[in-house]
Picture 1 (cartoon, helix red, strand yellow):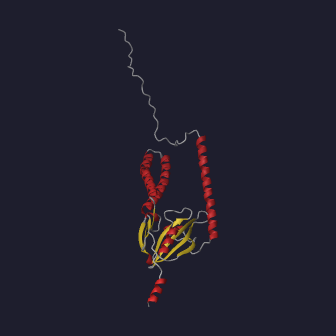
Picture 2 (cartoon, one colour):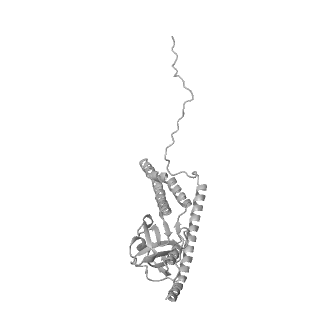
Length: 286
């Protein structure tokens, strides 16, 4: 009886204690995006007043140009807000018994503005999966490496997506998925490469041009990357040519560089009198 107990104890798997791992954005990145946001916010808030004053003064061309700049500035501020929220809120903590995550959630036009927190015990995890999703066509393809957790109650919890062309060192999602699978004592399942529709992913619109069931092999991915590289180089070359044309045109023109088509404030020249003279009256004969 004792020998049997000793034999069973020898074959029992020892409990492995894992250290606590935390994935979060560093203080330097938080400070940088906070500083940039606070620096640009006053100018961004004053753009509507600037456009209104130009329209009120009849400077329509200046107002249109400022409106185009305001549109581009709005897109830039949106991206800064997204990065700032991600820097302040995103966090993954791998504990001894569970994984705690606060990550972007939901689908829609702005999935990065909404966050959700999870506390998932390792013994409630059924599978941990990764797969590569391909968006777009041959001209501008986007390759994302995604990871998710499937719990025992059939809930799918996304861990996150990372671009293979620009990996975030603070949140290497494939590495995080591997660690979660190890702590749950499960194999990491690779679902391969699949095509996904951008409209269906972010807007919920079904597209007939993309079959999300078809898998993509490595040869097709290599061809997509090559095509994407050619398109990017072409766009960069066209941008350089346009900038060069604009610089040459500014130097060749007689108009000073930076002067707009319409003058915001008309210049009125005033000549100040140098000396006050008394009016002279004709002399009268007495």
